[in-house]
Length: 392
Image 1 (cartoon, one colour):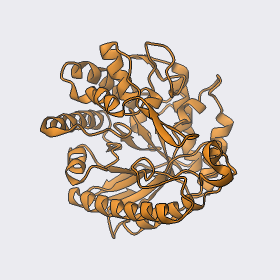
Image 2: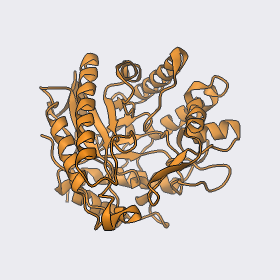
Image 3: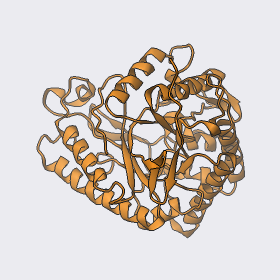
Image 4: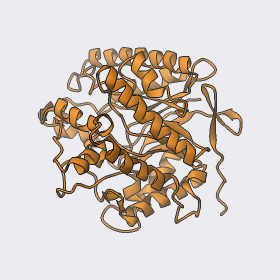
């Protein structure tokens, strides 16, 4: 059977286009795709990927957001880290993991789907920016506080210490040239790669919707920090645009720190797609153990304000924007309190209300009414069935 030939998603002002028609992202985060697509090994499960893509496509999903980066530690296996890593050490790659990424990208045309491909991660679960700092300084990562789903509390390390450590990736002049040499080399390696399955260079592959600099880069306080983050974004995005004139480029930002930081993170001329995320639990709006409507109602109100603000800011820059992450856990009370809230049988009454409100808020800001170009829920995994909606 001949697979459909995808076309590049493009941009005109604050609108995404496909074949010169408005394109709306109905997306899912599928961070584990690269490892599941490996040809062999304990992480490999290509049959599951095909089932997942078929299921997502049948529900109206047309984009998956995936990683093309994961990094191993020189200090052995680390907590809360995905394995095997794509990059074993700076410039040293696991060809089997790369082959998994090739295979996943080659499947997307069968399902009329696109991928937003992230080239780094701020958080520890893939190694990410902190691992670059660890390599450059030969020091151990001070892991941040972690959520304990049983005790319903955050516990563990010093969160600020982790932020300060990880921010050194783009804000420490003593190691900046080193971390960025490795990161830029990784960008070149990925963007210029020739897919071993399809034979298509990644930079020429229409199945890729956009390149993302990093999942959730965080701010660095003060005027110097603003300049450092802006420099890193501009340098990185310009490099990608030089290597690949076809694809959109986004930052991966949460856009949670107000208008000024939105402009800092999206002001580079090489950034062609804005990004935002919304996390009511992480940001203190949602109490997952409260069965009443009060907490979810408050979360919905804050989300509507957030979407409205991001629409205004994206309009100011004449950029389309996508809510690349949003999520809410299953009902976490009664017989499903604690770890049982992660079981597929746990109810999703609050989540369903929240998701419906998110889709409604984004839909109202789609072109021509606003600059939003869609949304992507977090996240698909084998323990839960996604409830998705078309946004057109």
